[in-house]
Length: 181
Image (cartoon, rainbow, N blue to C red):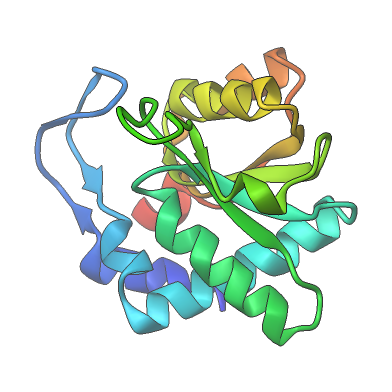
């Protein structure tokens, strides 16, 4: 499954071109994993692989979620797989900013998450780790017990070291070197 996912990423998500990343850094390549998580086979592979790894590494987990927009299909896919495997995990979405109306929430789906609920933050791509760290802190401030962070792809540009330095458990299914050879 992992090799199949790596090949699919190479085929439909990887582009060699200059871009500015969310971190503000310039890069000579881009990996748009929304092309994977919004692809039937891609979402199937990602959801199953992340579910299996999350359950293995964080057996006490009860929910998964992460920053919108990248984590939205990942969260939904893992929730679906978890129900099919009779080990249900709830999902949540972390907003970029509080809603301007209604309850002004930062986290959607929190009615399924009791205080100190053990959760894992999911991400598509990590570079420096700062956006995942922001989501991690928002979840902690909301009273959740964040066990760690799981990503599809680590660009190998400092995220792993950043998480280690901050005492945060982290894993990714793939690394840049798995895609670029």
